[in-house]
Image 1 (cartoon, helix red, strand yellow):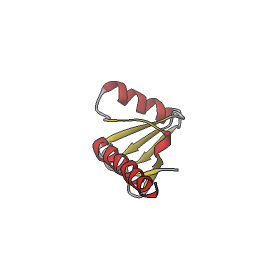
Image 2 (cartoon, one colour; image 1 turned 60 degrees about the horizontal axis):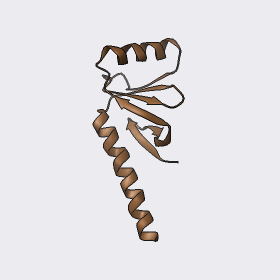
Image 3 (spheres, one colour; image 1 turned 135 degrees about the vertical axis):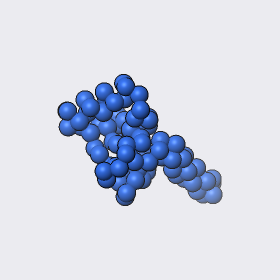
Length: 90
């Protein structure tokens, strides 16, 4: 299982992530509000401003105080490191 840190020690499974989006647009704001109303939102911001909204394949929404680009770079770095390790084994 591959995991990514989404801030403040909170971790999400990479395999479960569908998208990582900015919270600024009206459709995303509605999606976040609907998730909060339906109790499927996970607030991992520790009271800070939400900078990324992570949508999972189960329909849950994870709110993060880290920029979407930073989370994507962490995922890309993790995948790259695992690929390099596989090449070394071959």
